[in-house]
Amino acid sequence: DVKVTQSSRYLVKRTGEKVFLECVQDMDHENMFWYRQDPGLGLRLIYFSYDVKMKEKGDIPEGYSVSREKKERFSLILESASTNQTSMYLCASSLLERERMETQYFGPGTRLLVL
Amino acid sequence: GQNIDQPTEMTATEGAIVQINCTYQTSGFNGLFWYQQHAGEAPTFLSYNVLDGLEEKGRFSSFLSRSKGYSYLLLKELQMKDSASYLCAALDSNYQLIWGAGTKLIIKP
Image (cartoon, rainbow over all chains, first blue to last red; front, side):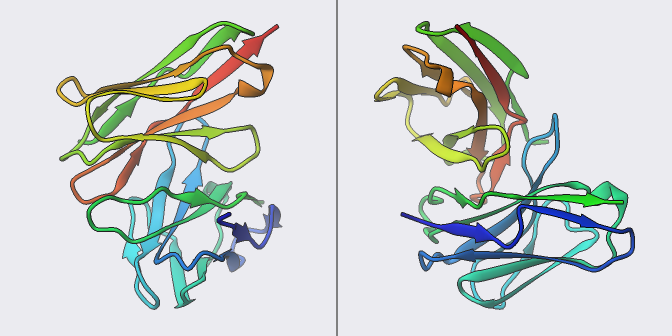
C-alpha cells in the first residue's frame, strides 16, 4: 500500500512565524504535490514537483515555498505565516506517467491555525 | 477559465441509490477522477474515467460524457459509512487536476 505521511496533524502558529510542513512517501513516486483545502472551495494546488530539486508553481504559490532535496520528501514552507494561511494542508504523490496522470495518493493532512 | 461544478450537499436514505453530478469546463481533457473524503481525513481514490460510458466497481459506478462535459457518481445500497464528501476532479491538457469543491453526502437511517 502507498503510504504518504505528514509531520503533524495539527499545528498552531503565530503570525510572522516560519512554518515547515513535511511530507514523506514510501512508494518511490516521482510526483509530489501540496494543496490547501478550505470550506466551499476545491483543493487548490500550491506547488508541485516532478523530480528531486525540481518545483513548479501551482495556482496559489504566493506566501509559500517548497523544497525537494530527496525523492521521498517534499516540504512546504510558510516564510512568514499569516492568518489567511489558516487551512487544511494536504500532500499527495503519484507516479510520473506522461500519457496519463496516475492516481494521486494523499497524506492525512495538517490542520494549521495561525493566530 | 477552468471550472468544475458539483452540488454542495445531498441527502439520501440508507439502502437507497444516489447520483452525484459533476460538470466540467477545462482546457483540454485527459480524464475525470472521483475521490471520497471522510470528515477530517485524506481524499481516497474511487474511480477514473477517460472514455465515454459507465464503469462499475461494486456498489459504486462512474459515468462520463465527454461531449457534454458531464460525469456522475452513482452509489447503490447506501450505507451509513458512505456519509462523506465526494470530490470530482478533471485532468486538463497539461495533466493538471482541476478540483471541484466537493459534494457532502448525508445518509439518514
